[in-house]
Image 1 (cartoon, rainbow, N blue to C red):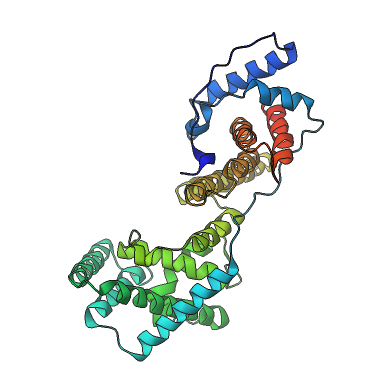
Image 2: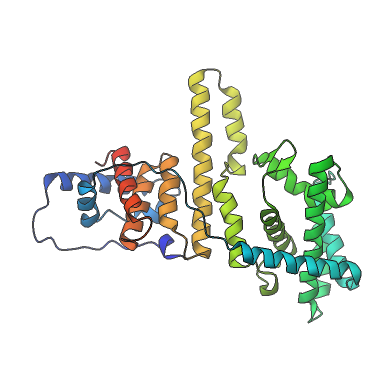
Length: 351
C-alpha cells in the first residue's frame, strides 16, 4: 500500500513549554473531531491520526485558508500506452490471419456468451450456465502449459472487436453481434454513470481499451495472471478517468433516484443535489485510495483531502492534508496543502 494510505500510530511527545491558548483550543477541537469521526463509517483509516502540535502552529502562521479545487491526476506516459496499443493490434491481426487453437476459441466463445448474456435478456439460470461453460473452458485450457500467450492473443482480438463495435455504434447506432457480445454491457454501465452523451462515449480509445481489458481479466478469472496483468501506466490511465469523472456508487443509485423523485420543493431538490455530489466525491475518494495502493508516486493524501473537502467531510479532509504535510513538507503541493488544511479546520469548526 502507498505510504499516503498507511495508518500512523499516535506519538506522545514531551512538551517543554506551555502552548498558546489559541493552539491548545485548536488542538482540543481537532482531537474532538477525530474522536467523533472514529464512530463514522469509512473514516477509520484516518481517524486515529490527530493533528500534531507542529502542524497546528504552522497553520496559525499561514496567511490564507484556501478551499481546494482540482484533484490531481496520475501521470500517464502516453507513449507507453501507444506502444501497448500497437502490440495489442499486432496480436489481434495475427489471430485473425492464423486461427487460434480450438481450446482458446472455446474460451473466447464462452466469454462472449457470458458478457453478452445481460444484453440478450438471459435469465439468472442462463447466466449461471454461461459462467459454468466459461469455467470449464478455462480448466481445459489450463491443462496446456503454453496457453498464456494464446490467452493474451485472444484478449487482444476481442479488445480490437470491442473497440470497432463501439466506433460503429457511435456512428450508426448499429447493434452488431460483436456489439451485443462485447460492448453492450459496457455501454449500459457507462450510460448509467453519465459517461455517454448523445451516443458518444466520453472515454478515449486508450481508456476504453484499458477498461475492457480490466473487465476481461475479471470475467476470465485471470486478473492475477502476470502475462495478462495491466501495466502501471494502463492502471494510471484507468484511475485518471475515474478520478476525473466521479459518479455516485451503484449501490446508492436507487436511493438517490428515490430522493430526487420525492423532492417537491426547491430546498428538497437542493438537498438531493448535495447528496448526489457528496456520494460522487466519496466514490472518487475510494478510487483515490485504490490508486494509492498501486502507484506510490501519486499524492494520495493530498487528493483525498480535496475529495473529502468537496464531500463536506472537513474532518477527514483535515486529517488527509495533515498527513500529506508531515510526509511531504516540501514539493509542488506543500504550500497548497497547508492552505487547504487551514480551510478544512476552519470549515470543521476546529479553528
